[in-house]
Length: 272
Ligand code: GLU
Image (tube, rainbow, N blue to C red; front, side, top):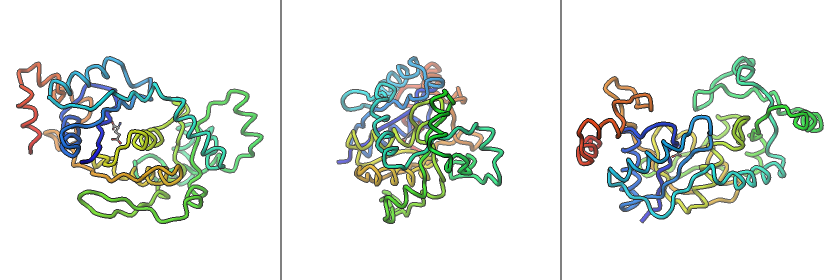
């Protein structure tokens, strides 16, 4: 039996897409999953959404094993990973603003649609960068992709439940941010750290996150963490054919429940 997890970010109420993802994790996990709240972004996540997430899962009859891991309560653990990568010369501070990145020369886009970083801060003199940090300049930390790939030196792939062996191309992401300016860590770092720590051996999540798996495999190789298997599921689409987002209030589990649907009705809606 696989150890799976459901890892929502509490930035709004759960919608049908989340319920589908949780149901998928439960099925692949033989009836349950680990629950992890990915709430590192303090400006977007709210405790009331975290509480509502747990309540909605319970109402749906979806069960999680053990305690809930709340990422914001573990920031020092992520800092330790950053310290390790930094000590190995694989990170560099980046002072660029979002606007600068978007406007940088020939900014093509990475797999997530965000502009690819031009590498502006990669070659910054280390003592100059240290001075700027000491002076309080706002900065994030990026992975030096070229050095990271050199440090791993082997071809990376992963096992996908439906697709078999999938080759990775982390280079397509460029120098990814591992610690943001406003948050002392990042999705990529936390998700791989926690999956390893929690013994997740089958990562279940939406197909929209499949490309990120390339970066995750690279981090696992760099940190010596085990490679889990992956199962990326289809996304639930709204009536307009677009994927559901937290703004689609009518599709929240809460709204469906308030309008008289039972948990059985909601689960049936997902059996499409
Ligand atoms: N926290 C992410 C989200 O809500 C999911 C992360 C994952 O499953 O890898 O989109």
